[in-house]
Amino acid sequence: MWIPHNSLTPLKAETPKETVEASEAAKDERSFVVGFMLCNTLTRAWETDVVVSAADSEREIEIDGAPCRLHASANDAGKLHEIVYAVPAAGVTEALQMAFRHVDGELSRMALQYGRSFEIAGWRVADVEHGARWRFVPFRPSALKSEPAPGDLPPAWGDLLRLYREARSATSPTWRLIAAGAILDAAVSGRAPFDGASLDASGQALTFDMLARSGTLSTHPEFKGATVQALHDEVEPVRQALLSELSRLGAVAARRETGDYHGTIRLTALSNLADLVARELVLMSLRNAGYFGVAETAKGKDMVSA
Image (cartoon, rainbow, N blue to C red; front, side, top):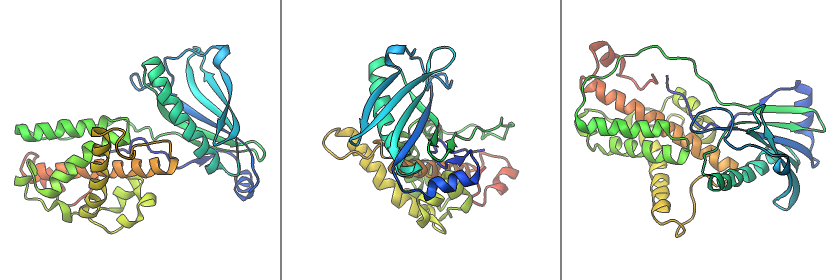
């Protein structure tokens, strides 16, 4: 089963409804605590390779001119596993936005400082005054049973599947959109290896299930009732802008994740949908070309997520 990657929402309330409602109704600036749980990109363990010392575990910082506090939290092994912020804000979303901007830059600096990789695995937010708490952790799927695989494929399909694997394995929505968007563009344009697939890629429907699972149901409501062509028209300019930025770094405005919480949510959802639809188009093309069995060919007549 396909699952989304790098999803940033939604926050799930962990305290009674009355505490959450009181926090949401309040408009005054007050203290929030925001903690970002970290993941080792290489080992996938919810810890990093950095050992926290007492000397650098806490420091005073400023975010948008506001005095804040950063606490580097260690696990039982003494390794950094969470970066916690105390920030003044008028609501949970504002607090999360402030802390997200800072932690994005903090982790980028640490990547250069230590030569190791750092990834945000989830986060939690607390309104100190009202006792309300929220948490976000990514979906952890169950194990998969064996599924039918395509037979021997021509080299062109093998190259494309390697590109799709890169899209699926990417830890960044930027790279996932670039790789999955390339497959989407080839399918809609009818280029190899889609040229012999007998598939109207651009006319395929974007189903409600696809929008819900990718996160675009809330970030891109214009995709409701739309086709793959509409997705391609949205993805391709973004993909080309990202490629242009990377090829001419410093010469054009940044389009990658830049600490903008809402912008990153939109980019993540869009890359997830491009990934999901690219997979569906590849599966349908292979079924149409006879690389799956008869049962699988019949199953692939509609755009449904496997």
